[in-house]
Image 1 (spheres, one colour):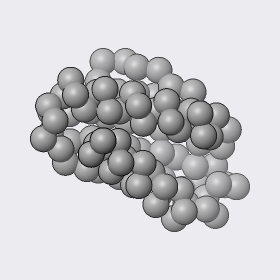
Image 2: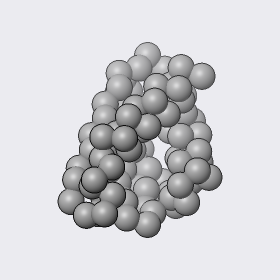
Image 3: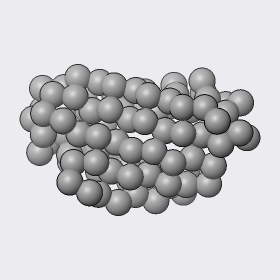
Image 4: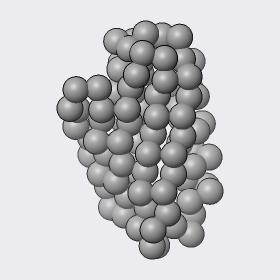
Length: 92
């Protein structure tokens, strides 16, 4: 199993960053069939072959994803996509 961790600082404040994290989770859900649910300031993600979290803090967003054996082969591509989508969400 491969583990991906992407962290991005932000100056949005926690509430605005939560809104951005929700948009990110919705986009990932639409594009990859990933389900999401909130608990406090953490979004849990689960899809076929992958599960993880998006943690929202006052000045940081952290995405952690575990990939199954099959998806592990594509971990660098998936990490690049997560980085791109997170950067896009935080700056939109």
